[in-house]
Image (cartoon, rainbow, N blue to C red):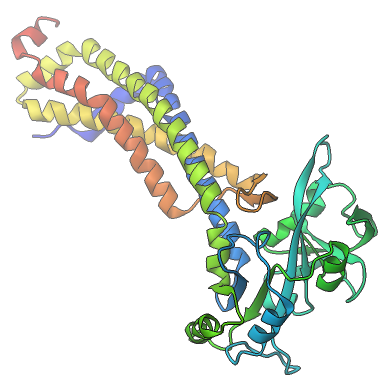
Length: 388
């Protein structure tokens, strides 16, 4: 014979003040846990969305980022002529030979400048990245000192509106447009003509090369051709894989730091839940004796108090998750450890994160309520009824 669930829920409501305080402590821990997972998911989604599965990126062997890489003009031309590279409607290869550098720009309301990625691209760049759309203005003219900025840059940095001029590499660069990259990493970049930027920064080689595959199956053949060609000291990766790798260091840092804080806070929350449940047992000794006298066994009492602590954890979990869900309306800017440039991304709540968060909350309630539940189950009927 099991103790009715309605009876257990009414006990929590009867002690609603202590229930609210304990659930609030659990909710705080759940909030930290959920936001860490959401931050990591947002970072990964931003960088994975930066790449297209049907595109590939060529960088120097051993280079982890485009900043460290170098692809000579000869190597770029050899890769461009490979039959695995798709061609556009005009019959030209869908290729963007790119140079990537870092410059310091001033944020609005900040005293110190921050690093921003300047990407020199070819005219095929927009065709290769369909998620990138012009939000205002126009695209830069080939061979000019015109630039377009990502939406995150336009929101956060000084002098980045159409018509403004940015000074770097001993030249003035006119902003002629703002593009929206659908929340991908390109939103945190500035684009211009690759040849002009190479001249301004005195570069003799491209940083990388992006291109569209002629078919999804062509990647393996392309990689084999490149590895077999002694002229090429580059490696190729699918664009999604390349940008996903860029999140590895920062993702690891966020996860370790967040889970460490969560572990510390969760100990306090579980102790709070344990104290609450011990107080509940002490105040309900006579009630426990009555339940035993009515025929409920020790395991029924144990299950009832465990269920009560699980419900307490669930209430805290739902409250913490509800507050964490509001973080989706906020954006976060930090330095990408791979590129040392600012990267803007948002918190992302997925069904998997919601499930993990609630399981974590219920587990805290279970651990916090286990010992008090055992104590309640071990009370002798005679001793318990003396409190009546």
